[in-house]
Length: 419
Ligand SMILES: *Cc1c(COP(=O)(O)O)cnc(C)c1O
Image 1 (cartoon, helix red, strand yellow):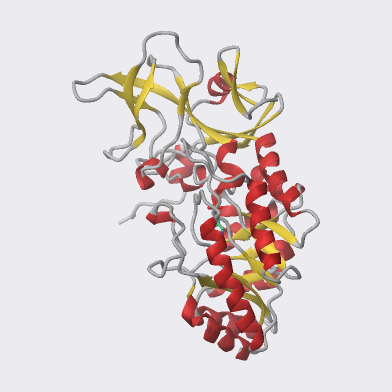
Image 2 (cartoon, protein in one colour; image 1 turned 135 degrees about the vertical axis):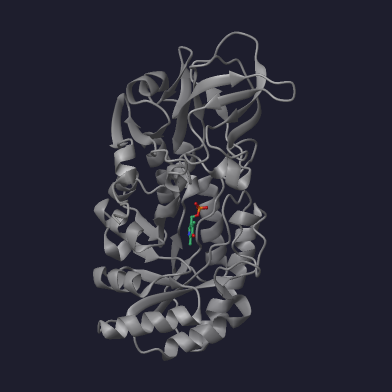
């Protein structure tokens, strides 16, 4: 196998399976993942961590399909979750609870209880009220909750403002200046056990320097917190490593991991466990979204190719003006025109790609690339559109790992008034 998604005999393939035949067999819109691509990306993290006290906790929110999570669980991954729903998914996919870290800014008491009962590795806590609540809930259960504080190192991750999380102006984390005092508060709470520190400065980060800046601040804090009597067993550096959508040049996964681990060692913290929480860099380029051209609509200002996948299927373009490569699955020889690739949803923001030069005819199948992260998981039923099916390709085999939703399923929970 060469690339996980590559052309063979003029047809785009996922591993050894033709994407044209998948669109024919399973219909569109259709998400298609490559098992080999998932394993390769995970392997890059795992290999770079080998021989170090470092572990990988897959961010479930980037792609939470059970089959995808199961590929990682089988490879030995831990998981990073942000809800009780994701906890259920991770466990069902084969994760062991003691390899799950629970992140998120708004955990409910119910979610805390569930996670405490199954015995997650750590709660990544983001505020004093959350510490208070967790202390109370753990006390009621007669347990001690393992806690890490998510600190906000106030560094600029140099990414899109909607996916930057490490600045003072973001809602995430404990402000850096308040972190030491917050650790002191945590130490006084009887049903908490402080075990770590974490940060997560944003997503689609294409440089290592913001990570190293954040890390230096975090390590300085670790020294202070330990001088106050706490023990910080692990440092969780979060996720956020970028991928290539267009012409970005993010660091290789291995180089990124080694840069972080080397910096931690240089600063004298090699004895601590290090956690990585990658999402996008594991799954983003392991998936494509297939969509069929319904209509070509030429115009004086713009040509539109109206396709059967919309912003409800893939929100990133409309939400972040994100770029996704778009290829015809069977490219035509004829002259190309410039199209905006738009969906059927009744919103002007419903587009997948702008100004794309393609030779198209109605009925052609397009592959929207790099759709494995924040793709299906962000899809909605807007316009009463059932969500797409998901396929996992493994060599020359294709498995349906999520059936296409039906309109009946969408309506199942609704009732009308009887009087
Ligand atoms: C979203 C998130 C991640 C994963 O981010 P990616 O950019 O997909 O790698 C990791 N940790 C936390 C706390 C997150 O919120």
